[in-house]
Length: 259
Image 1 (cartoon, rainbow, N blue to C red):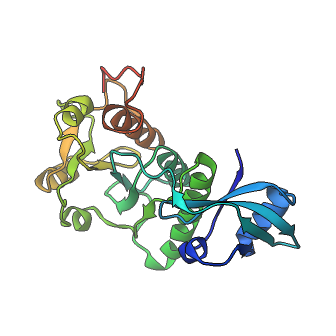
Image 2 (image 1 turned 60 degrees about the vertical axis):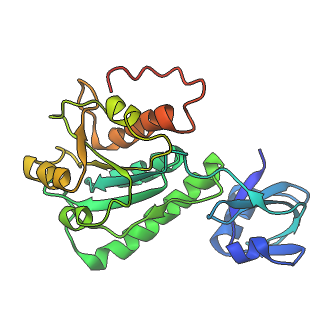
């Protein structure tokens, strides 16, 4: 597999026969990937397109790429088109959730403040966190072969998020008190439907929040008899939805009976 690097959409579509990659991305190619002249590199624009190139020159912290073919669509988000809505967990657990969700093809990630979220609404702190999550999503896309990068939304309160329009998406919320299973809800959805899935932080959503979500069209679903950690729920649910409605569906042998 050739090395991958994100570039600007205008760079990918430009008429120039070559492109200089510098800054953090150039540093990564030179110091981390240690590319050499002649190495193949796949440039992607973060919006779903990519273009093959070869290393023409390696400098101090920058690399000159020469295009070797035209731009074309690359691997993007999972066909299920999931918007993952995550109650903010404590510590750095959100980092792992962003990384795993990106690898599993999530279309966008919406962090929300809930009753049991340890982080509170302090706007001055969230600019740096958002930039960090965007970098993690970009790196995960680079590593897993995606040509796009999922959108990371600005954190808002749960009620504010629930007040937004569903836009035709199937809305689900993972809740241990639910009777309907995730599998039933997904299989009963219209083929090609988009999904919005809400999950709580450590301790989950409280009963009042489940009521708020239900009123906004989020149907509570069970993930089985075991209680999953906050950082495990996203991976489990996204993999299940992808197996039932997305890119993991063909030839998937994962047992989903209990979901």
